[in-house]
Length: 549
Image 1 (cartoon, rainbow, N blue to C red):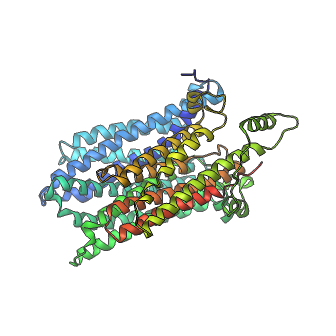
Image 2 (cartoon, rainbow, N blue to C red):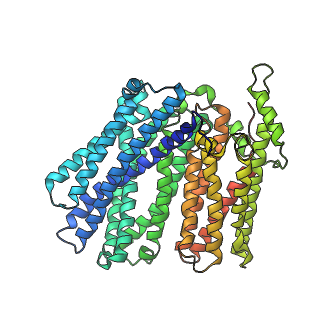
């Protein structure tokens, strides 16, 4: 194995720092949702309903697991930030780092989360103990409050306190919503092993619908003023990383609300005494699909915190025309400069005198993206053909993912092995962008291998569920994959395509999950939606044209 360069850990640290943000939000949501659900929904049932004690035990288990996971995510993030700082400056100014607000708030939240996990673990053995409940609510309140110093709001000069308060309410509302969804899934899965819990399902759904309405209302009421403070005009909404991620967040929220509306309608019918065949056959799977959307939404929310607010970078806002240039239909580039021509162009770009624009690098990148788009577009067309003209051969369309993975392995990063001079491990761990490219390449290979087996072998029942899970993971990678450390306009224009493709990948994941879970004809239309989303991703890649600077 080649020896890592001095900055070899920085790429991994950058990636872990970004990924831990989303993991921390998910862990926080699981813990807070379990607490609210356990205390206000399940605890009153302990003396009245058979099996309620078993259900609250399962709920509280997620409380302490979420708390410990939150503590671990903050620990990893603090270590990753230290490595990034050390590699950037050449040394770690420890006293200065320990004195930052980010470190103090993150460290405090880590300790509080760990204490919350210990208390929740004890509560599992004594769910009637009012003293323990008070301790847990106090610790959770401290965890929520400590998060205010880890947001954009703490760095503002105007309306700081108001923005911090709104951010706390916004985060808590989203956490309660997602945490409640997790609790519904826990109930549904637990009822398979304990049939006595089955009658609680419609009651829990109706209870959550009321809780969800309050949470969504709080999200909307706090989200609007936050958006108006951080994004000052329509162009900034389209032309900055912060603005585009905010639009993505709204789109994901709308999708999740669509699923939630169907679930709420089924719960309302049950409360009115009207039979609803969707209540047991369809609604649980819609909630599963909703969880795909909400996990992605939380990662987008975490990524927003790493982007400079649009209002702070007015000179770097891309115009709507420049953004449209990245997406408008154009003939794909099917020829590529040689690797030698690429290296010569990179050397010319690095010079101070006679500096040249990165024409060769852009052409190399365009070829990679456009050919990848052709792969996906053809695969989507073959898959869609299979829905309208059933036959066996379209089931082998996932083989295109394997071919795409081989293509990306050789072409994705020209400066790294196997074509470039930088070794495999040195490049993978030394550059966060290359690391994500390597993960995407592996993901494409695994997707193709598993999905061929799932679509052609009857016994591959469990394997077929990995495809939507991996699609969602790939979508999250795209949504959190940032080319723009300082939000340069050209880098944002590249990032804008990744953001839209990430959104479509999440749609693809949720739709494929529903195709596997629902009955015809709904399953067929869900499959068509999934393949349509993949086709749109292919078109975006096929029309990709990297801007020169």
